[in-house]
Length: 438
Ligand code: DLL
Image 1 (cartoon, helix red, strand yellow):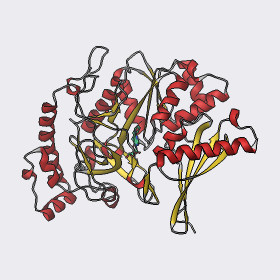
Image 2 (cartoon, rainbow, N blue to C red):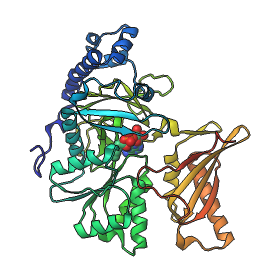
Image 3 (cartoon, rainbow, N blue to C red):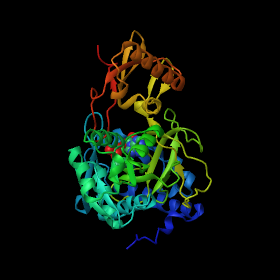
Image 4 (tube, rainbow, N blue to C red):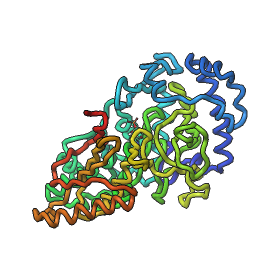
């Protein structure tokens, strides 16, 4: 049994040099595996005049081609798989914004590795066998449900597989079963808080200790809001279906950056425009190569997620794996207004610090002539909704000013009553891009 109250894995604390040795060994394996078993890669490698034997040092990864989301879609469903179908034991999909979903597959060994990595994450944030873990994400094609479910079981926690929806019942379960840890998107956690308050239950009374929140960008201000409301510690969880699902990177007790498991993923950050590799501390697109995946060995996969690798210094938790900054946004979520780049997470960060602002907002992007305009629709907390026009105008200007200070540009702000905007059980869709509309 790899997990117990007294044990954590030696892989988490081994010297960086050893991690790098493992990386090289596994990189060479995965490149050879892809070349031998995926015609797509053999063709690409030949076009570039490279061969798996050319990978002698870790730096040689730069010689390899990137793999994109489009490559996965174009090879729908199983075109990039490296094993025959009878070796697969499960598939999941990731629904993109358009077209065919991306299909990802697992051999029995892939599943073992994945469960183990997710268990590492949960153990890292303090989940133990005495905990009750309520898993409030979708259990179907989304990787978040089954991925974390098996990991919490492996630690020996009692799992409540409640999935999404029926929020009042979720809260009742928490109270009845003595839930101590929850897993959901941060936007669903905000919704749970609101519903609990509506049921006249103080979220603090539920008795939660640990919140694992991920699958979408969220901000430091939202963390504070959730921690204060539920009296728990909130940890950021990052992953993507193409790299198994959750369990790629996770915050430790320090809550300052996410440890990314370098014995299973080779990490690069590149300039999204040029593909050039960037150094530590430089913000760019995260590129990942899974080092142990048998079913789907994607080489230099462009995640589309913006972050940077944090300083080398050893983390106070003792783990030696590098850390990435919380995801700042996705390349395709970036809004460019009058030459200024804006990520929705920056808007969220400002709004969640303003006491009068409720938990829900929406960002509408429109075109006025040649220029893009941002309108931020904000729900006002009941207790601040006075109905007095002058009060509302004062608040509107205040929000506009706070946003201007952070973003460096003027936005339109529209105040709406609590309950006006859509609530989310999974990943929130807070951006409404109307630029394509006439
Ligand atoms: O969202 C896997 C997951 C499940 C992660 C549960 C964490 C918890 P996909 O549906 O394939 O997989 O979506 C992956 O979601 O490329 C990011 O853009 C975004 N994302 C995931 N986690 C975070 C996070 C799952 N912590 C895509 N912060 C990724 C910001 C995140 N964005």
